Length: 395
Image 1 (tube, rainbow, N blue to C red):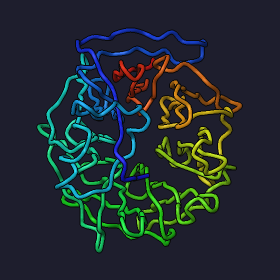
Image 2 (cartoon, rainbow, N blue to C red):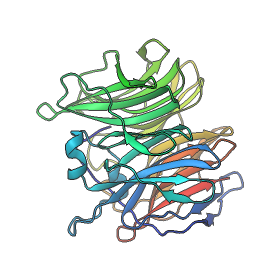
Image 3 (tube, helix red, strand yellow):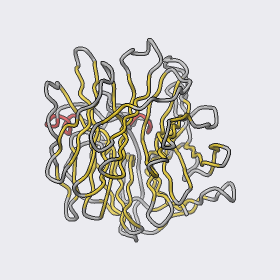
Image 4 (cartoon, one colour):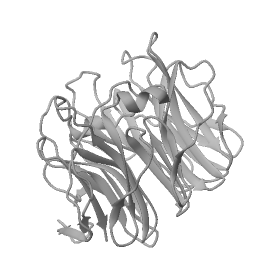
């Protein structure tokens, strides 16, 4: 969900070959190989998208060094901000980061200064969209450029959130408007037809809500997800699950998560009857209440809450590759200074913990299936004084 707060992390060495392999804790778990990241300074990688074994993009941020601002903890850097584009880049704490994988090494690619790059989605080597704090960006195979989305009528402030590239003439994005007087947020959805972005009407969803994830498989099958915050923590929050059938967006009943506070992070479609939503839940709205991992599943007929290990954690992404499903995140909690990354894998009896791409203090921020098999994983690792980004690939 979008907030006004800006926060974030990481550092990194540079070279060109695979750096190391993390041993698997079980024969059935993934084996991860880390790759060198050509970035120095406080950095976090928030999203990754692959179109093939030799083509992938990863976006994130580099913390600006103003000589006095302490480095925020990594999980605090995820939320994008609703603001005016012409003010955003100059006022933010973060510089933009974009990396490209060419089959041999990850390399830094120039792009306009647009703050945090929160999500990347590629449909081909010449069609890539990136959602950043201050703008939407598009890669045409040669360069990154800003592409304006349709203004939201009457909006005091607006910002883009999630983006999904399906084809060069079919892409989706979500965003939110924000009123600083009423503190009301309202999500919106827009569609790209190859020439421009257009607003797409939504059903009535409440007085205050955000839309934090979107995914699509074709012109008549897409999902957008978010949270209804109308009650402002006075009642349990409802998860918003919207489906596009080629004509209209319709709200689909959400399952009871058993949580008071619900925050969704991503929606991922493995097929029309295999869709996953990741996030976190809290059993009370209290600040110190721990976050618990949340996974929802669509089987083509109904949404259900997946059985996951109980305990502290937030799932930042979920992905399916070759019939294997992984979800990953971290155990960060505002009231607890220590946290680690954690990864879950789907089994015949539910979800269980498995090998994470990094150990120690870390957060897995994004996952992407690789056509042909395997997954990319990105995020941040290290303690507050030695933060560094990571990029890892599974078998």
